[in-house]
Image (cartoon, rainbow, N blue to C red; front, side):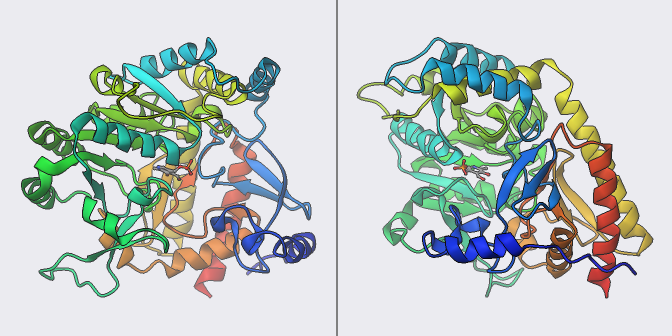
Length: 439
Ligand code: PLP
């Protein structure tokens, strides 16, 4: 069997030792630290690949956690961003282009009437929750277990399944994702498992009249791509209607990626508010809150506060205008989906030939790979399953210059620039990585 060639990380390792003197863990975001000897520093990206500072060329399936949907350094979007740069940045005033981008979003996503911009997914979801609270006059909210909606305090609650047994009477304890989150806030957050209609109805029966919003990612972009069934999303919609709760669909990862109209359009469900970010500008920082008119008009003086110095920055806005145009008017999304299908089928062949049971979750443009006959339906099933095979395989893939997230919760993201060469390099490396994992 071919051993993984040693990857030269001399410069990255040396840079890490310098960087850690100045930057906690040597990085700008905690999730970029992969160990003292395995943290890599990027020189540049182009298309479906990036190069580290040692000159290793990687095929990348993280794409910055999804944003680079057309590939890195896309000439069309970068030229638009350059035009946006000439506008001058921020003015604490609006520009005409905001309307053009808002029009595009409302034309692409059914049921969205008005739009506000933000800088990141976190800001957009935080704004959406505030909007829902301001509109309903209620404070508590419902989250789906295993979801990630950003780094703000209200979103960072999960269930602790370490000591929990399936079939047990009690639900797992709710805990915060991070230290530093006021425990007093816990009382406002309710959690329920994905795809469990009975539990969803129960939680609405108990708390529905005090909920401002229910937040859901119908494809959980931070939990192995676990997907809601259409029945579950529709049940959520009808319970929200019944109890006067606003439905927020978080499309930060799925928006403009799994379909022009987002994952909500695949389920035929229109939320009251939707949040978008990653794929909308091919990596330039911008996000959007969109929704139904009556709700969105609560963004006003004396209503829900919203704004920010860098909101609708001219560079990001121009990039969004061009990126959304491409996603709307060209076959980019079909190209991405067909590459994803080819990659999944190549992975499946390799695993099946070795008798390795596996399944996929999510969508062909962002899929999870799972080593069990049935993909999990919810976070509890994922958490209680064995994902060590995935972890070891991902480690070998990195050595072979294929980058997927080392944590199996993050899906594999596909971009328009992933081409036949990326596919064949990937599948060759996967054969080796799987064999090394089996050793
Ligand atoms: N919502 C979802 C579904 C996400 O996946 C993320 C980030 O991964 C966020 C919100 C937060 O977005 P950001 O990292 O841009 O703040």
